[in-house]
Image (cartoon, rainbow over all chains, first blue to last red; front, side, top):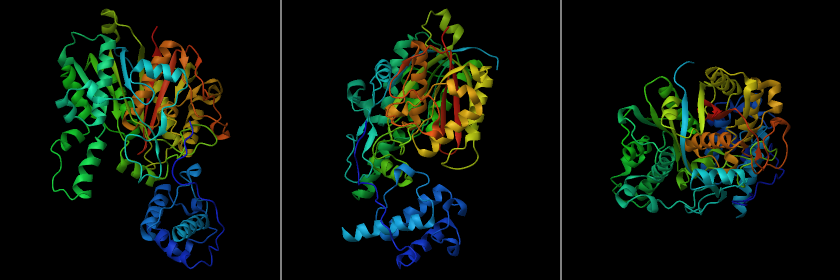
Length: 103
Length: 402
């Protein structure tokens, strides 16, 4: 059976990941949670190639939710590998921040 | 491995698609799904609002008031399922010291949630006195042993989502090895609580809209609750007392991935299946059905199919594989027991249970998953897989009663 529950899935909204002032704040937290050097967390960097385990990513997203006091919706159809690149992650978080601000 | 043969002579179940094992089987044959909007807990703070709940279960109808108060829902489900299993087995006159209870460890999550909600949330300075005995991981094991006066080796086994499969495997080994003549084994869980659902949400692996194992559009697991208890006894004992033999447990394999805390490792799963086949002394080609772990997360299903391919190679193209979780959700410490129970009942009836909710073939899961409808299929050998968080794998090899 199919049931609709919870908020709709995030629509990808293009963001200027490189220029948005919040990107650095986001990536500083990601660096702290994943133990990956901040300088390596560039938008094009592949999460897989950086070797970030899925649980570390889950923990980083949780810390971002706590830090910004927002809910970052899960991309359930990609569970376990929601973000292919650092840019995908930042873009998803920025969209959640924009929605929280608009609400 | 040599030793006594082990028969399944009774099965009880309480799950989202049946209040008894016969209802569970009938619903599975009909391709029913017990997953739906959550009704047993407040959902206003939940993002994910579906689960597999046992909505028809009225504990007060089964348990007297004092016992009810002593038991968390997880133990209540276990006792009710155990009664059904014992009644079916007609197991009277066992020697108490030679009878044991070995169940999957399951803490009383609802009791925890409520006790600490009152303590932290409402600022009460008291925690209910039965919180400790209701939440100990062996609570359901102890409740079942007391219910039937079983005084032999009894304990709870912990391996997250594989707990009740490990429990059945150990009960099988203890009877085979001569340490027990009779065992009540399996497990239960009642994890649909607000706090626990929030914890699962934070792991970002829950589906918002349904459990669709092996389907290309699968998007995560669905939490479920339920219990299944099996009566195991030595084949000689079962035959000499004229018991109806539902199935035979003939092999057990267990391994640890020693890799990732939550992501499965195909080599570990494959090794557990090989160990079960070796223990049962059968070739992969002898297996006619696999009850998969099948959680419907992208990673689990892909990894499980890869593990199956490692073990069964070309035989996998002719080997039906289905997921009981598609019908009942992920019943955690009760899941493996429900899956083993359904496997045994389907072996008896010559039926292959379906994977419901299936919509679209996935090249990463190139198997016959018995999509959406059960079908007839007389099979001699089946495996039931459980691959838990923490990388702990357990596989039971089961044989149809001859």
